Image (cartoon, rainbow, N blue to C red):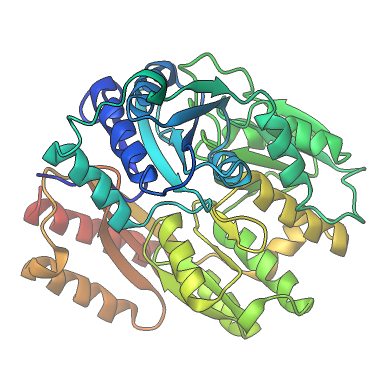
Length: 450
């Protein structure tokens, strides 16, 4: 049977397995059981969500499951995923559950779990929760009377989180004089982000801040920046920020309307920290998907790049292992470990804006710290995921492509951790070579797996 938890919690189409109310209830019960192992006090679990219509159904089911195990529930409503991590730690809850499918369309939903320390649960603890569900070991655990859990709403959760993120911006700086377009993807940042940037002094132009339960990520946000680019140009803004549905990533558009990736932001912030002697161990963490040009830029600066698997949880694991304070993904997940325990789109944007304020340079100039290597990626739908290293014909094709690129690029063929998909990515010395090799490898994947 397929593992319930993927690279970022449980995810699927809402009201179909595994994202059903019944499964949410069981996940709530199992999570509560694990939390209740810590003795000596009454236990609580925090629940937050993004703006998907299915959040109401799943929130109620999670609440019922948790309360049925004698654990209290703290409800915060729509809140960015990193806000749940912060509030969980701040309120000393035993765990924090987030109902969100991040950048996916509204019909999907997911459940992410944070520990009491504000970090995502490691695989071993997710496996324990999954085992409790599949084994039925807790099906007869039924506290009664006053031992049943209670649920209450935390009315000031948004205010607490706003204060927290604002405090990551330098006290001696202001955003006055900056015009910023904010694309909130009709998602979890729709209320909080405009308040944060306005209170720090920026002239903000919010777009896609009217969620209706079905428009989250729809042609907007970090994966669809076309409206952001148009708004930056129309309003002659200094930059634009696009968050994803749950607010843990950010994509940036400079004053010319050019889109910057997470690799650009990582490079800009890494150089700034290095110049201020604040980059611990002269090291950053990136993923196998980070652009070849980013790694070349870091090499020129004398910064070591430690590589992790794709997924912000794996970036963070590597950061902790390597004692690095900065890491991230090309998709816009950045982690500033001195500020937070997880990726946070608003915090990341504020650190970038601090560099702008500190240097007085426009974003288009700062982004020249790295030059993107030509990159092409093709996603192939698959019905199965055999280990790639065991597919001899595909391995041979990959080696041949790598030989053609030599030291002028790289090849990456991997399965998506959240979708039934194989991703083929090639970075090379020029667009023609890159596209040609990518298309050839994609055909080989279809022949071997499709």
